[in-house]
Amino acid sequence: MIRKVRNVLAFCILLTLPGTAPLVCAQQAKTKIKASAVEVKMIPSDELLLPAEFQVSLYENLIDQLWKKRVFQTVYRDGDQNARAAADLTTLECTVIKLKKGNETLREVTTIAGATSMTLRCEFRDNDGNSLWVREITGKVRFFGASLKATYDFAKKTADLVDKDFCS
Amino acid sequence: MISTMKVVVIVTVLLLCGPLISVSRGQQQQTATPAVQVIGLAGLKENTKGQLTVADGTLSFTHDKQTVDVSASSIEDVVTGRDSQRVIGGTLGTVASLAAPYGTGSALPLLRKKVDTLTIQYRDAIGGLHGAIFTMPVGKAETIKKELIAWGARTSIPLQAEIDKMMTTPKENK
Picture 1 (cartoon, each protein chain N blue to C red):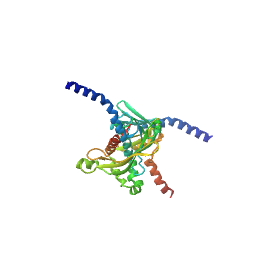
Picture 2: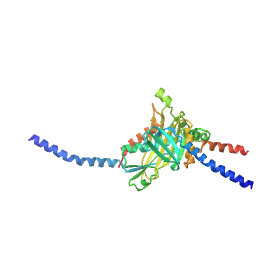
Picture 3: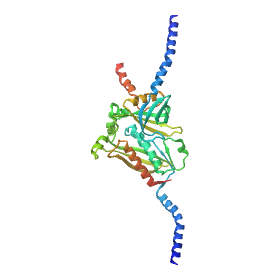
Picture 4: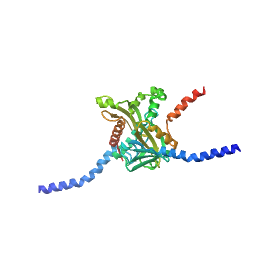
């Protein structure tokens, strides 16, 4: 008898489980910003005289990491004509606000000195130009590797934060 | 009569030399430069080693049997590592870096001096902006930049030769 009751209970729980999944998503959607596409703008270099290598590396790493996280259905490049027709489009603009010099040799020798770091202000805007999300994110390279790795670190951190706050 | 003869001789010489000049130019452009694609070219992994060539208005990066082409006319900006050093830390950039916040002159040591870098920004067929970075032996980046500009690529930083010309012209006038 007890076994029968237990089986019925288990069956009822199993029946209700698929129904709970959309509820969880809906709750998440309430707290997350909904956007199905993003257009990543090129990082401007005029204000801080950012070397072209860093400008391009930041931009390419950012696009790459956003694709990998699959937060958005589509990640458009700056100027992509298809972005105009995209529904739910957001624009991501990042500007470098701080750049600290590093030294690769010093990093490799001492492992405590010579770190490179860069801080960027990242802002998501909707189609009407309203600000949706603003963060200051720092990318660093502490131990081994060229200074350009700081751009990868920045892009990875940005994609992680975006993943937490956005859903498509 | 003599002047007519002169014109005929000059025209003949030019006609004969023309193809020779274009052949030598073509050979120069097709010289492959060993390079590393640091980031940016579609379909290639980061830090891919290969050969970089400029021929018939196209920048080509070849790795194994795979080739990625970028039309020179689609390049909106081509900058070498030396350009960055000149603008940020050189004579032109000294005043700017002093005035800029957070000591932007400090960006200079971020660039490696053992290798040359070539950075390009270009548009694809649907207007999307791409960026690519290459490293190559010292002295090669400026040559490739020169060739790309000759084929219609644009640059935000003029060639060193043009800057030298600009700097020397006023002295000559005096």
